[in-house]
Image (cartoon, rainbow over all chains, first blue to last red; front, side):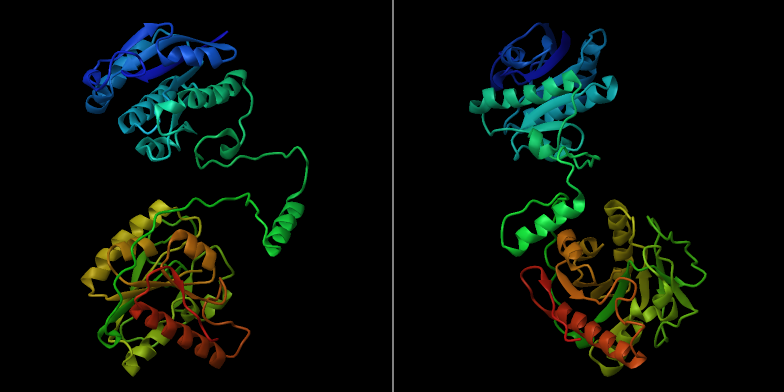
Amino acid sequence: MKKAILYLNQFFGQVGGEDKADFEPEIINGQVGAAMMLNGVLEGAEVTHTIICGDNFMGTYKDEAIRRIMGFLEDKEFDIFLAGPAFQAGRYGVACGEICKAVKEKYNVPVVTSMHVENPGVQMFKKDMYVMIGGNNAGRMRQDMGAMAKLANKLIAGEKTGPADAEGFFPRGKRHQHWREDGKPASERAVEMLLKKLNGEEFQTELPIPKSDRVDIAAPIEDLSKATIAFVTTGGIVPVENPDRIQSASATRWGMYNVDGMGRLEGGVYKTIHAGFDPAAADSDPNVIVPIDALKAYEQEGKIGRAHEYFYSTVGTGTTEAEAARMAKEIVVKLKEGGVDGVIMTST
Amino acid sequence: MVKEIERAGFPIVQMCNLIPVATTVGANKIVPTISIPYPLGDPSTSKDQQWKLRYHRVGVALDALTEDVKEQTVFKVKF
């Protein structure tokens, strides 16, 4: 029989309500409150201990609470750690996430919790652990605890877990190689999807792209004829000697290059260092990626006030979103200094 | 990058070939280009044709910067 330990807050650990939210962490032999329910649905494991901590204590003295709980666990043997379910209770959800993360890091055992999608703990911890998709109130206790146990039973038995939507946890953003039981090749699956799409039927992509945050659309330029316009590119156009040593892939560096007095970018003076495509066309005529020639023509005609004297360049292939965001923030400083009013980003 | 620059308050238009990527990532103003290695000038066409295409599409991008759009918009190009 394997061993499980469950973390609960003061309410589900039957200490008390909001007035007991400062309750300091305790570990109790055996099962208290909701731990009894978990014990009833776990297969091949027993809940040997229940840890109870007030939500406010965990919220206010997080480091101290985690330190004490880690101390409780030091001499305990356990194969899996669970917390919650936390429903839509924000403090409780964050507490479950914090403690699960700490336990996983220190003891390297699987950890499972459960939260409602609106619980802030979901965004904070879904990448670090199994957060089961739970209900928004304690009326869902039996169902949510059952879902936690179902995944826990698989983990305890050493079975492989399936994809997030099949198992019912929030996607962790991990991709796994997976052999299908039906052995159907990707080509057939893709054609089936295409046929469904053409017939207007529902189909499920195998590679969902996580939705990312949106930015408000910036106020438009009112008078283009007075505006200063700049190019930023991820196409890797640089002076041929690549003075900033920008990497050809997975870039962490960017450069700014003065084009004042130039009518166009000449091949042989500028080139692309981007490793993600055949550079021949852009090396021969860099304006196909950074169209300085067209921008200067519009400046001559008076359609725009001024072409900014620099263009800004990095390489977009393999570059992480975090690095791209950091580089963009650094470029923004220069755009502000240069009095730029609008930006054209060219991407390859 | 587009998002961070726009977050800082600069009107920005992305010229790119992979429109679905740009829309998924969150670019708000998009002008299509013709390919990945040569977004604004196909080397198998004449220099004059390449220039016309480039001049036209950069012009569309400049106009896009002045447009008061309320949602993600892919601007139309003629050639």
